[in-house]
Amino acid sequence: MKKNARNGFFTGRVENKMRLLVVEDEHSLREDIARKLRLSGYEVDACADGEAALEALTAERYDLVLLDLNLPKVDGMQVLRSLRQHDLETCVLILSARSEISDKVEGLDAGANDYLSKPFHLAELEARVRSLTRRKFIQQDVCLCCGRLSFNTRSRVATVDGQTLALTRKESGVLEYLLLHQGRPVSQEELIEHVWDGSVDSFSNSIRVHISACAKSCGRCWATTHPQPHRGRLRDRRRGTMKRLSLQWRITLLTALLIACACVCMNLLLYRTGATGMDALNGFMMQYQPAVRIP
Image 1 (spheres, helix red, strand yellow):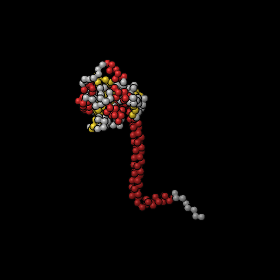
Image 2: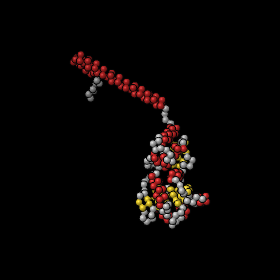
Image 3: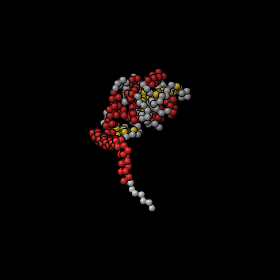
Image 4: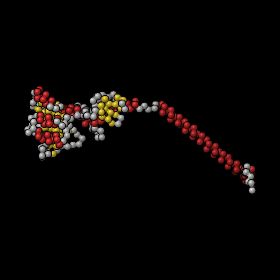
């Protein structure tokens, strides 16, 4: 983690993690929030005033902004309105001591995704962060595809070659998360964090069971859309092929045996008759030689 001396916000960049910006003027609270979220696996930047927040939002792109309203230099509500002028996708969670209903309505109408009143427990804050980062998964591209597999994030329906898969809600969440992060490995802890809300023990077999069920559903759907020959038919075909090969081998072996027997008989005949037999054989062959005409 390092501090940007020019704009005064802290950065700690880690690849393949969701990026969060904490904007809070109270030093101890800001450090506690950032430490808690980093321990939860997020990449966290932190700044202490509205001006530094605007600079950070201009320089970097974040998945979630935790924004206090009572900020020095630039008010938090002004930071929110400025962000929404050019960015409608980044989620914003307001953290404020203003707990009146009118304040919450104003913040939500200005473009915030959630509102948490101070004082709050860090466990509740972490749960709200998980909820908002999950919503981030619904992309502008409604349909996520990987080969013949597609998933509609709006209707929550997965299909293989147009054939609908029967998936549970958790299986759909696992499939959606994996499709959104194609090209990189996804750990079990990451799935627990974003699909199970961290409510499942990391040593539990639940995730493997859901992934296995999802894979089996895809396999059954593939078998339905691409039927294979029946095993009995394949077995009959193999047997017929083996029978044909066996018949050919039998004929070949019988022919070879007959030739070998003929050769043995000829040798025995020649051995017994000797030269007389050879002369008789030559005379027999000479009878069938064509006569040669001399012009």
